[in-house]
Length: 239
Image 1: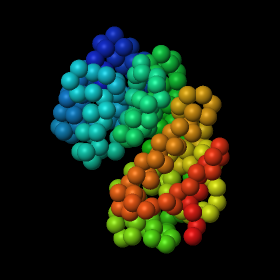
Image 2: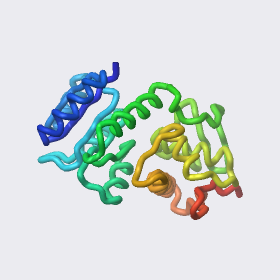
Image 3: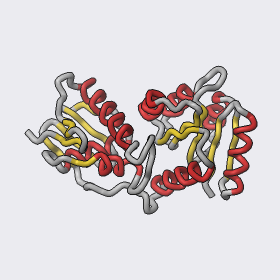
Image 4: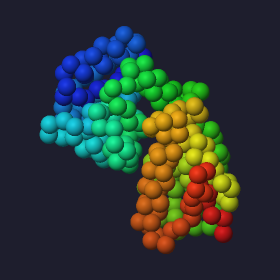
């Protein structure tokens, strides 16, 4: 049985989500402060996924997630928030969240998102497609799938696993234009839907690409290998 950790200072909302999760056969640990969640993990507490409120007294949800990542935990996180502006969604994804859901959405939507994420994380049908398991060397780029590490000009680019999969997909098909949907599936698995509208995932892909470019440019300011094909997707420049 999967365990969900939820952090929200709104007692009524938190307790409602907690009860719905228990009714859906999840184990739940619940906190009204981010500090308490961090203390839980520091004392070897376990969770398969974290639900985070954005705005909380003291430590915000973004700060909590950053601390989780700084502590080396790769637990998937979903933000639950009343903030619907795209800037908040992009900030959440940039900070390492896997999804961003408005609190006004039904519990059924939240449950479906959780199930898709957990299925992908545990190797089920939502697992991203495999694009190769051998070390790939392409010009100055080196990708090591067995460890999920990427190198540019001999220096490691600090990519998340999702970012690595996107770069691997692009580089293994260098010169070919890949659709937004295909790149998004590398992170969340086929059929997963996030963002606003039927093609809201495009915003998420743009955020991933922006972050990937930034990490490579920290190693090499002249990095320009990832090109956009407007309205379609991206390609790894093969030259």
